[in-house]
Image 1: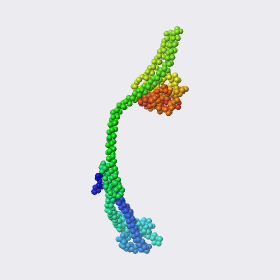
Image 2: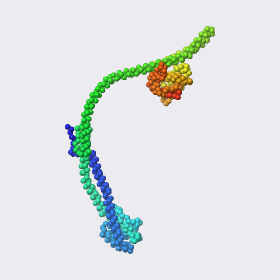
Image 3: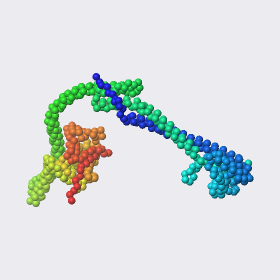
Image 4: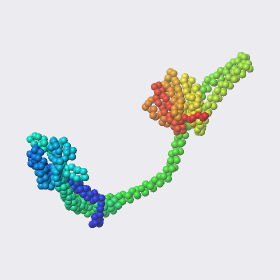
Length: 530
C-alpha cells in the first residue's frame, strides 16, 4: 500500500510563495504610487485654479472700486479701500499698484508706502498681460502672486500685483498627502492579507508536488500527493501520481531486464575469454602468413627481375663477344699468313683482355645489383640512377631507345641502394615495354631529379603511349598487368610502391602525359656533409 505524502501544517517559506506574494505586493505598491502620481498633480492644479479665481476676483473688484481714484490720482481713497480689503481677506499679503508714470504704491495689512520703480521690481511684460503662480522669495517663503494690467476704456493706465499667502494651499496639500497615505495604508492592510492567502492557495500544492518530486528523484517511488481540486493543479496532482506509478512499474521491468542483461553479459564475457585465449595465436599466424606472402612476392619480383637481367646480360655481352671473336679470327689469320709477330700478338692480347675485363665488370654490376642486403645507408642518387641505366644499356641500344638522365651529383638518399635500384630498373623496364608496344619512331626515356624544399623529386617519363585512365588506379595492385600472358607478373609496381612508401617513407605516383606516362617518386632528402 503506497503511503500518501502530506505537506506540514506549518507552512514554511519557499521561493515560489515569496515570488508570487512579492509580485502581488509589488503590483499593489506600483498601483498606489501610480495613483498618487496621477491624483496629486490633479489636486494641486485644482487648488491653484481656486487661488487664481480668488486673485482675479479680488483684482477686478479693486480695479473697479478704485478706477476713478486712479484716474484722478486720489491715492488716499486707493489706500483706504485696499486696507479695508486686506482686513476683510486675511489671505492677502500685499497689493502693489504701479501707474505707467510715477511711483508705485504698496499696501500691506500694517500700512502703506510709496516705492520707486526699481524697488517695485516690475517687468515691462507686467503692463501687457497677466501672470500668476507660486513664487519663492529669499528665505524660502512661498507666496501666490497675481499680476494684471490696469486698463480703462482701452487706456493702459498701469499694472497691479496682488500677493497671497499659501498657508491654506499648503495645508490642503498636506491634507491630501495624509489622505493618500491613509488610503494607501488601508488598501495595503486590506489587500495584502488577500494576496498572502492567494499566494498560499496557489503555491501550497505546487510546493507539495515539488517536495514529492524530490523524494521521487531520491528513489522513493512510493511518494504520492493528495490534492483534491477541480482545476489544472488537481489534474497535475493526478498526473504526478500516475507518473510515479508508471516509474515504479518501469523500475520493476528494468530490474528484470538488467538481470537478463547481466546473464547475457556473463555469457558473452565467457565467450570473449575463450576467444582472447586463441586470438593472440591467430594474430601471430596471420602475421606469419602475410610475411610469407610478402617474401613470396619479393622472391617472384626478383626472379622476374633476374629474367629481365639475363636478357640484359645477353645484350651487354653480344657486342664484346663479337669483338672478341673478331680478335681471335684476326690472330688466327695472321698466324696462318705468317704475319703474327710478338708486337701484334701483344696488341691483340691486350684488346682481348679489355673485352674480357668489360664483360667481367658487367657481371659484377649485375651481381652487386642482386646482392641481398637490408642495411639502410646514405647513397648518391645519381650513381644509383646511372647503375640501373647501365644494366639496360644494351637493351636500349638494341631497340634504339634514347635514355637521358638529369641528376646533380650532390643529391643524397637514405635506404637500401639495391632496393631503390630495383624500383628504377622496374620503371625503366616498364617504360621500355610501353615504347615497344606503341612502336614509337623516336623512342625516348627521360629521368629528371631535383630537390623540392626538403624532398627529392624523381620523374621518370616516356613516350610509350601512356596508361588508360580507367585502369590508372589499379596498376599498383598485386598480379595486375596489362601485358600479354607470359610477359608480365603484375608485381613490379606493387613491390616498387611498397619499397618507396613502406621502406623509404616516400610516395610513388603515376600521371598521364600527352604521349606517354610520368612516374613521380618523392623521397625525404639528405643534407650533404660539410
